[in-house]
Image (cartoon, rainbow, N blue to C red; front, side, top):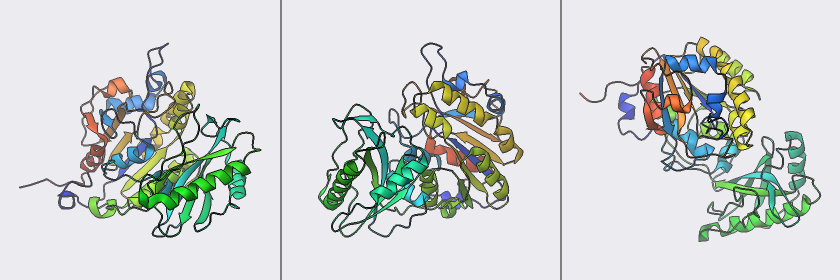
Length: 401
């Protein structure tokens, strides 16, 4: 853990390599009709074989019963207490897009969404409109002006974009307008403390103007705002763990989080195949790699059980490429569970595998929630995963005399 008081004393620089594969939304729940989860339904010969010769367990991303966002879920896996090290998705998305943020700037993660004539949200993601369409709508919204505050807009993946507020006296303590479910109206952007009044007024004015400009759109006819944040000052993985870490992720938010933690962001493409190409080409230059796999989470959030099964099967086909690199420690983890039957993130524990020459295989029969629950790692806080990775790669010295 990054806050272990003696981490700098026991962490050591070695040639050993760590690859941490984070499968977004990895965990699931059984379909009532079959009694099997997505992992139990999928055909995963490579992951199952890996599970039999690895240490297995389950992770709790934040705390029992707490449903994590993707930010806290990933932060924990890198050894940062997600309650202490909490930042809104706006700044992560902005940094991941390469946006330069000045001191005092407030970054906000926005979604295009669909509302009916009464203002009720019918689709929080506007049907996941394609990026080209979203970019043209972001261009349309760039004409909005708010007195006393400078606005800049930056298109992201699909239905997402970033709004940056610049000016004096801005705060981040503003109510998120996304209610988190359909069938409800958007929440007003009200200040939750005195120091954020200007931000709340600016966001409210922006959303009102956006609603007018988007009124004729068939799907993306409204916007939702959340993740108000400013650039944090956190300890670096480079200094604390004595690593040369790198991140490979197609989605901006994960690149942004990695940059906050001190990882070098490697340019990559849109598919996991290309992410693996990037990993292979950079393997000699770094000793820690975070590589991200998104499709399982997207399918789970859409409530599409079969699509998540297929996404997991597609991932399984790539496992031999990961193993061929010969990393000293290979970690397969998830930031949270996204069961298709919930169509959302949930609090359920997440499967974990740690594979190295220093790990005795548990012999668990398969890579599933129930099988991993029987593994030697047991159920641990996700903040412990990074320490296991370092230990299995021979990067932690003995503690104490």
